[in-house]
Amino acid sequence: MKYPCPKCEQPGISLKNKYRVGYMQDTFCEHCNVRLSANPWFLVPFSLVYMWVLAVCAFLYMFESIGMMAAVYAVIAWLVVDVLNVMLIPMTEMDG
Ligand SMILES: [Zn+2]
Image (cartoon, rainbow, N blue to C red; front, side):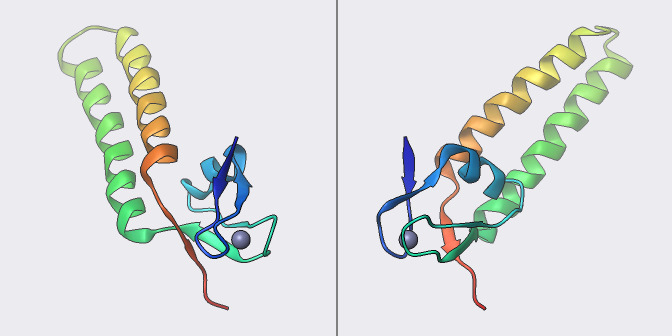
């Protein structure tokens, strides 16, 4: 399964590269070779969600004495946010 390129609209971005884009990396379309990154208007709020997940789980660990369950929650929540990241964040062409 590949993701469509915002420029040539061909499925030129692999799932792995789409995932990397969500972590502020750039990638290239296999068809038109355009340089792509995640749309910053979506990426910035998602970065805050990742921070929030860590903050909530750290809070649970320190004040709710659920111990290692906090780490389990953190991993699960992180994976959920990762899936949303790949599904929801659109890609945009990079200038230059
Ligand atoms: Zn393309």
